[in-house]
Image (cartoon, rainbow, N blue to C red):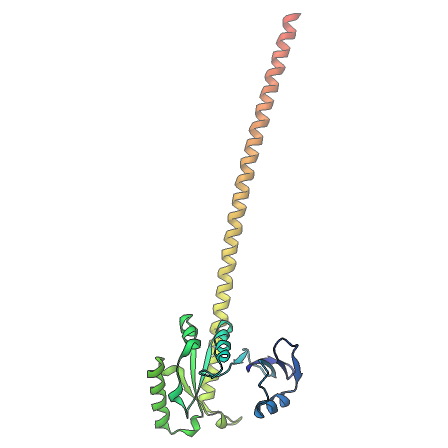
Length: 239
C-alpha cells in the first residue's frame, strides 16, 4: 500500500481500492488495520494528520518486493517527489540494492537520504560500519546516511538521528520552495518576453498597414488634386 501523510486541521484516513470511491476511517482504525495486516486490497491510503509539517510524506511499498507492481508504484512516486527517504533495516543491510526506483532518482538528480532504521539495536561501532558498508555498496556519501531510533524519539528527549533528519527535511523544503519560486519567476520572464515579442510584431504590422494606408490616402489626394486642376483648366479653355 502506498501511504500518503498530509498535514491537515483534522485527522482521518481515505482508503482507495481499485477504481472504487475511497472509504473513510479514523486514524485509530487505520493503525489497527495496518497492525492487523488487513490492508491487502488497499492500493493507496491518504492519512490526514493535525500537525504543522510543511511537506507531504509518501510511504511506498518496499524495494525488492516479490510483487512487481510494488516496484512500479515506488518508481512512479519519483515523479511526484522532491526528496527520497530510503529506509534500510539495520538488521538486513545486506539486502539493500539500488534498483530501478533509485536509479531513476539518480538520473533526475533527485536528492536521496538513506535512513538506517532501528539504530538502537546497534552499537556505535556497528552503526559506523553499517554506514560505511551502505556508502560503499550504494555509492552514496556517508553524510546522506542517517541512523535513527524511532523508539528512542521521546517528547522530552528526541532521538538525535530523527532530529537531524527533520532539520534536513526543513532545509530541503526551504530549498525546494526557493527552486520552485525561481522556476516560476523564470517562466514568468519567459512568457513576458514572448508576449512582448508578439506585441512588437503586431505593432510593426499595424505600423506598416498605417503607412500603406497613409500612402494610399496621399496618392488619392494627389490624384484628386490633379484631376481637379485638369478640370479647371479645361473649363477655363472653353470660356
